[in-house]
Length: 509
Image (tube, rainbow, N blue to C red; front, side, top):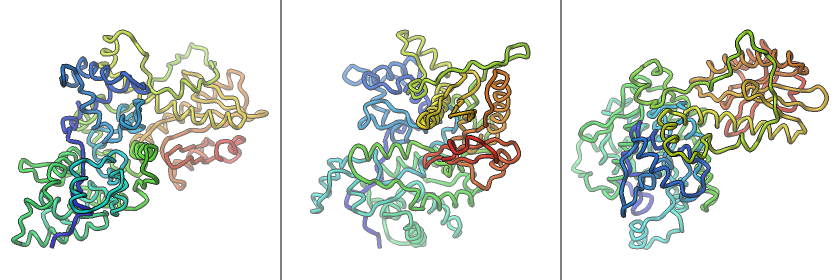
């Protein structure tokens, strides 16, 4: 017997702009949006013109006007790369969007992470469409103003991507074919209100496949298009492929790493991994993009360390290449080692983009073609961390300065207390290599600061991921090298100080 849907007309609504789900096109959208980050108006036509000029997309003419950006910007919001322009008039690229631009994660990794985190209810899909309102009214069901609230009322709290992957894994483990049809998904997975109901879905699929007279083709047929869109979405990840008949099948990566994939599903099923709306107004919807537009450290377990040496994989998924450190100033042995410290500019550190508002459109097109957005995105992420630190120390009464070509931040408190901070934006994949670089840099800057007549100072490396308290890297830094470690993550700030650090009370609090 088939289970009822949470409410009549319920579906997993998703964007139908599948053209964007190609590595070169999706990245092209983002790189053309990057120069206009922070703009409040009149950026639509400019981005469309840039996309056409850069060869990202042919113009979509509507009523004699090019509007490719308007047609496909929804895709970027759906993936958490920008805030929805319907609720945030300022074009705002999320932390995830900047990381993607910088090459810190590739296309299939982005799709994999976000497809398993995407949930209902969410802040992107909040409008009750006319078809659904008629369906609810026809069934004498009263409904609130937003789809988000309706789904909360009906007990919906589900991540479809995680559910589909979990069902496929369990079918495989039980000796059944792990592939899924859209009809099976419509009939047995769509009725699940929460991910914990995967067991019922698996049982129903196994029973159905043993042979029944049940015709699934018309069951919940209204959701067919959305389910097919979800299948296309998932097939762009490292977990699934879509065969010629529309069957969703597990990839060799999933099969070979079944324990890792299964444990990740378990993590995503935990209630603490969900976004829980506190209200249903515009600020609450903005909160969704704050949450969905950041990559949790736990989600970075899916980054493909194993594939980085695979030239084909990198070329297909990292359109502008893998991330790399911003270029440092190269001092030869004959140059003066002294520093050029200046007061930090908080407004500059908090800017929304790195592009100059050039009147020369051809210059902007050439800049985008040459990949300027990649370095700029990395720099913006880096500078925002410095800004946050600087504001914290200024509020403590410290003076803060920096050298554009070396020291990220030098903080001086009362008396002789001072510390040098070296900031690194990293992923779980790049952390170890970047940490080694940071150690060398901060030691060099410490020496050059002393040669410039600087006072005694502590050394602190700052990362934007959480390093576990029991990690050997933490002990190596604090106990072996006498260097402090700060971790700035979405959930808060963590710090570990070496014995004898004079300034630790300022940056470990």
